[in-house]
Image (cartoon, rainbow, N blue to C red; front, side, top):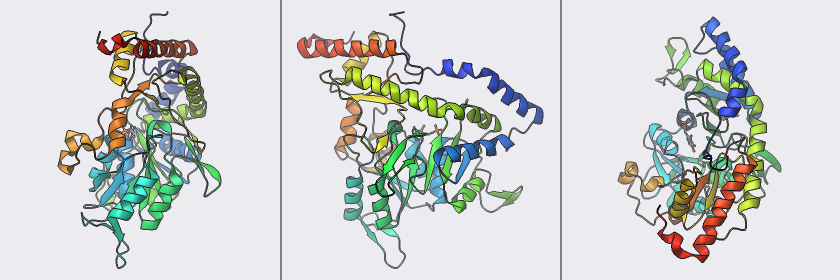
Length: 407
Ligand SMILES: *Cc1c(COP(=O)(O)O)cnc(C)c1O
């Protein structure tokens, strides 16, 4: 038992428990043959909107589609600029590019790893002006309109949204949340004096139901949430070839619908999401207790305004590569989210960001490591992980031999 590998992610146990419900759901669809646009899609959309506290949820083909369609629906078009962060999965910036815009990366907050409201404000005040004739916010050196801001609720914790929304309002720019890692995460809005869920904070939000997410389908799936009827209607057209009704196309759209089978699976799993998120929070709390006092290790920071859902549990250490190798050697799987910030990716070389431009993101990329995290992670597994990390820290701190550790 002691020598068994600890996987980074294991959702088998919880999925298999619901096997009969899934099969029942599939059988229903099999017998009606409505694989596209079956009633299960709308049922799930209603349930998910209710969960997020929004008026609408529109199911789409993936999280990438969700963010892209949300951006298009709030008015992002060819030649626009969209501000986001570099420490995210590339889907965030792909969605921006696919909507026809160019991403602008700004640095993140050192403690939360999320968009820094101060840096956003400073960036916009120093680089943008509001054109009084068109009402657009124009980037001074690029000469193009900044149309939207995309904060990413990274690792399942929301960005500090009040000040981000305030800056957005000041410049008349929409905020689209990338909530792909944050199903059920909560933010305490000082301004509204209440807890608000991810997906209900911006003008619209994109969610992913990629299998490994807190709410995962058995294939590709996503959704957009919004309170805005027009945005919801636009996304319903965008996902379905621009159709307002069958074969009547208001515009060119995409093949970006949510499958009926995936909707049925998501509907069944929805009922457990709250409980799974609670389990993740309990495991994060347990990790915090176990790791807090280990020298050289920084545990995640959860501000008082946040109730994170720990899609990932990410610690920091200066000796990241060595620690990751050490954990692997001891049978503990880990991940890096993400090893290269987007502005330093080959894919974005043409944007011309130089090394050192976004120092916090660049530093974080070198220090982060994601530990195993899933609702059924055992206390005994967490204990073993913390013991191995403690052992590593001790050997590193008092016995420099570990520096040479490379197996
Ligand atoms: C998973 C993810 C996406 C993309 O979702 P897909 O469903 O894989 O298209 C976008 N942004 C972030 C932050 C993600 O984690």
